[in-house]
Image 1: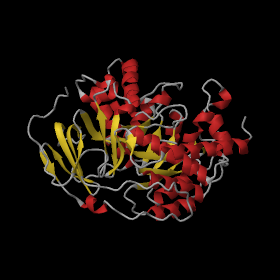
Image 2: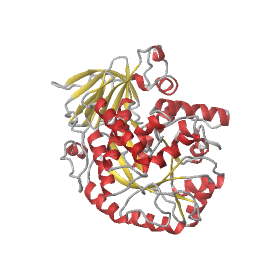
Image 3: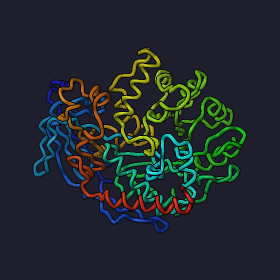
Image 4: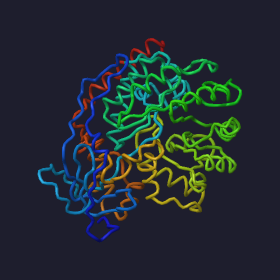
Length: 472
């Protein structure tokens, strides 16, 4: 049985101005973008009853046999015995109810390239395939790939994602990915990036970033950022720029108020960013490998965030150094990265981080299972700037939540729910997914999404791309 961490009756209710943003008209894209024709399910009033609530809200704690009341897309009450006359009931008995996972770095545009990959053929691994086919993408291809990635995210319990779009080939491609995010129903950030293979001395489309910033406006489900090319100091590496180009692009982003994210390749990039005075709290770095104590001090000083992609990074050379970052006080979040050679599985990401920490530090750096769940939920929301609206089960926040079953063989007879989520759970245990009050997954099935169509569309795009690239 699950053990409650409080034993007093707790009923809290609240409303905030967030509720007023529950139902807003969709924003028209500036340029024609594809559409799936699948409508999102309507928001409705309901109560999740009898679940073990992991609120991730320090004031509320964990509540055994608790209820969550949702109306107009917002959490209006949480506790035991919540009164909600007329509201639909979602039975949460035997389940963990928690905030949806928040992914902080995912190249959604690569999603449907999975069939082309071959693990043991160096000519058909991630980089050769994405570079070989990515330069031929149409806006329709971008739309289809992102929709397919978002569907996989939903099935695995992710309700917020960071679409790291480092193959924006034109304004129409940008619009297509943004439209896919809106059609998918998840909360997220679209990180506007370069076109794959563009010259290192050519800036990204700065004017179109400003245009898209205006188009997105105050959309409560979507924000805009940029994903910078790597920085190597000499402007010669594939897909890398020098400090001068970084200053040009980052200055424009900062004038627009856009957060910045980039991949790093060890200590040299961090030291160069510091030398160019580019580090700051609006910067998220990805892949903490091969860094030094001097780097951790700089990151802490400048309040830089770090996104960890455990499943992919565990197979790379160098040490995964998130324990040192946590110890230094750097904000750490969790990401999927891509689903071409890995799977969308935040449970495995947390488990991998627990295992790597034990292996590397022998327990000297204490990272609890609750801390790991926090990194995957509220920590991710803090990284992306969504923590005022999501990341915890808090009255007044938007209803982004999931139910995780505990009746399957791998989850039976669990003790601590955080241990179970990190060490035992799988995406197959995700029963229900709610994003902004919309029930997108129920009893393990999509409620409105036509996955077969998305898959067929993706296969059609892959066939066309292979033909264009003369891929054998």
